[in-house]
Every structure is written in structure tokens, then in C-alpha cells.
Length: 344
Image (cartoon, rainbow, N blue to C red; front, top):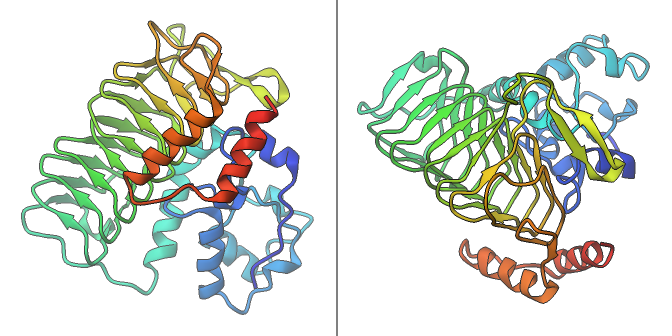
């Protein structure tokens, strides 16, 4: 049985900007969202009473977690200390734990299933760790799963010349463009388009990084677009601890040695944008300007000089972008966006 969750405000604030427009359960890490992981575990372990545990919404469930719970190793008292447990306490944890999550989700999704045959034109290393769903289109590319598993979902496409090192997931309907260079641990969420060089990053879905440029140690939410040549820094020139501005807490936080771009939903960057190390971009922002960006770009920003996006124009631009993927902006989304805009 799937547990009941309390999506507390403090948890949502911790994960800014990724829980402004979605519940924490709908954050993607690994191949699946947290909610989808629970649903899959419930299918595989219908006899387990997960609801008996007091589980926070930012706990990332896994096969290892379910196996330990089935053996009686996990209780409410030791839940957060068990080695099978990962909890998203900071936004950078999404890419930091993605290697682990990809491996766990690969086992979760492939248990009891068989991969579709890999085309002969695809060069593979450790093909036993590659899972291809029926309906994916791939050919004349290189898949190296010796460093981690590779999962390719139905309706996705890997164009010729692409080179991938696992762990990696290409979700339903997404496209890797010609010559893309993908390093693990990377997730390309549903209906996204990706090109250039990507490393250790999570793209939630419906977003584009379609051209050359570097994206590393980053998280990109839904309905984002990175213009051609957009790149981010992910490490300081001094190789010292990266500092990240966390707006809800109004303080600088230590984010480890590497942290790139954390971009909220409905935000976009102009061509050749250069994002600073550990840059946080809020929701519904249009990023453009000369030189390195500021390390924090607020929600509804127009450029990088502190000008606010006009609300009606922001909504119309979001509608335009959603229309490109045959989607519409819902009334619920509009109300949430308006509430956030008016609160600024």
C-alpha cells in the first residue's frame, strides 16, 4: 500500500525552485518521479504496508528500500538512517543522487521484463546493462554501459553519431540530436530535445537544450529552453566549496565541490548565455544579457538587470512554448503562476 505523505511547506522551500509548481512527489530523479517510483513498488510489493511508516515526501524510494523493509530492517525510528534511503534536502541533491537513482530505477523498471533487440548498427559496451523499450528509434550511435546502465524509453530517438556513457535514461518521446555527447549520470525526461555536451544532469521533461554548449551538474525543470551555445560553469577556479544563494532562506549555502545550473519551470536563456557556477534561476524567467549571469535570477525576471517580466506577456509566452509541444496552459497553472507573481 502506498504511504500517505505530508508535503510540508518547509520541504518545498528547501527544494526551491523545483517545488513551486509541483508537489515534491512529482520531482524526477533517476528515470521516474518519486510518485512513479512508489506506484511501481506497489505493483511489485502489493503485500508491503509502506503506509505504516511515517515517510516524508522528499524520501526517494527504491528496490533496495523495499527489500530492506520486507526484511524488517526499516522502521519509522531508523528510517532516515538506513543506508538504502536517500532524502532530497537540497535542490542539488537531485543531480548529486542521480547516479544512485538511475541504477535503482533501472532495476525497478526492468525486473521481470526483457529488452527489445538493439539494432546491429549500434555499437555497445556491456549490452546486458542496456534496456531498449519497443518503439524507440536508434542507430549508428555508441552506448557504453560499462560505467552504468542505460535505459531508452518508447517513442524516443537517438540520432546518429551520439555517444553515451551510463548511467543514463532517455524518457518517452525525447530526442538526442546528432553528435550529442552524454556523460553519466544524466536523465533526459519526457518529450525533451538534447544536443551538445551534458554531464551528471537531470532534465525533468518538456525542455530543450537542443544545440552545442555544456550542461553539467545541473537540474532543469519542465518547459525550459536553453538557447544555442548556452553553457554553465560547475566548479570554481579556486576548486573551493561552491556557494549557492537559497532565496526562501535568504542565505548562502555550501553546495559541495561542483554545482552548475538550477533552473525553474518555464524559464529560458538566450543564445550564448554563460551561467555562473551554482546559478539559481526561478520560474518563468527570460534570461539574457552580457557576461556571466548573476548567481541568483528571481522568478519572473526579464533579463539579468532586475527588470520584472510583465505578467500577461509571461503567460502568453508560456502558452506559445507549450503549444510547440501540443500542450496547453491549464487554469490551475495560471492561478499558481499568478499567486507567485503577485507575491513578489
